[in-house]
Length: 174
Image 1 (cartoon, rainbow, N blue to C red):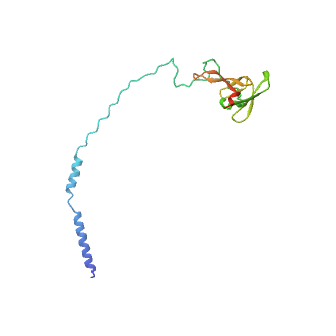
Image 2 (cartoon, one colour):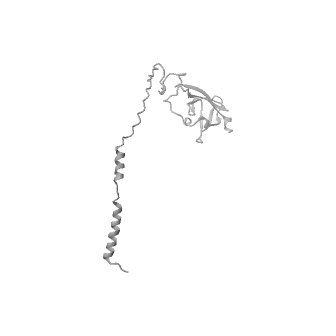
Image 3 (cartoon, rainbow, N blue to C red):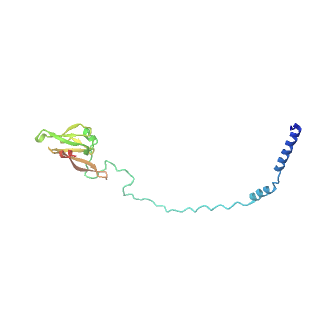
């Protein structure tokens, strides 16, 4: 069965007509609801929080030390000891004292020279007056079994303290 083009066009117009008829429904109730919602008064806003008033405090410690100031290195405190900033550093001052080992001595009597093995695996000769360690350690005496020295360490209040130290030949038996 074949449909003619006019019959087909008539069926299409009928379907389109029924479809458009469903789109023309009554929208009056929706328009009334929208108008009612718009006419309602807005809910009240929450009140702003009350700001607390703080008491002001003025710091007036004129005679006291400023807790935020860095202590001056040239301040006179302690015993007046301090490292010499103009002294040329010696090779063994690059290593910590506990990283060095005494490995022996050369000479005899008053002209004893100590032999120190540094962490760089080089053996250095040291005499009284030489410096070693990272705390400005000055050698005071060289003995056959030990090297004695005096280190300068900060005292925490801007000054310096002397501290006795030694490297012993027996320390190598670790």
